[in-house]
Image (cartoon, rainbow, N blue to C red):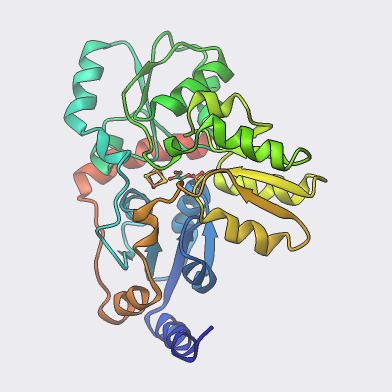
Length: 305
Ligand code: 13P
Ligand code: SF4
């Protein structure tokens, strides 16, 4: 690390104490941002952490819907994002009006939504879910006749196959994960025949079909730690490889596709983390009328799993 970065890290640590702040980072963040975080994890773990921390300020290094989820769970805390323009294109593919229309078309259906949604969409949901627990949430709803599952059509396809349930879906998808193609996995498997293939359920069904394991980002970290294999092909956003290598220095990780980079996850830099702590900006605050409804959907999920 260069001298300037070391100084910046020291300043962030000092300011963090002064502000009584905690830094949460998603597994896709830049390595230096992951390193400065008090906790890094997947969407579910970050939500849990945001709900239980005693800190007054949460600096959220991730994308907008994740910071909104923190605000929904911890309304008394100041939630700030170092770069508030870091959004999730998939979450932006469905508005609350879209969901209300879908619900009106299927009035008896229970509405389940991926955490990658806006707070306004969450406020219209009965249940929230993450990639870790989507199948468990759908299995929990075994007595429901009709289930809406939004916004990710590929996660819906995976969950539908795993649970054996037909789902009413939306046409959302992750522009980063669809860049991983079956040819990529086939090529990497040829080069590394002994490697285990793990992919995220946001990937194309043709990619999911070639995987040994379909997992959320932190589940991948666990799988890589616990599996006796020495080599892994990683079918998710590039940022996770840093954590995998750090956790398992004796194992090899091959990114399925160099194209799988989420530009929004890379917006947060050390400088922006420092400025956000200095100015206590930009705040992410979900209005109370939306928050109270969105909270119920998240709380129901947290109770199931
Ligand atoms: P995880 O919850 O698996 O970390 O996924 C979040 C995400 O945005 C995947 O693209
Ligand atoms: Fe959204 Fe995909 Fe980026 Fe995750 S990787 S934040 S789903 S665009």
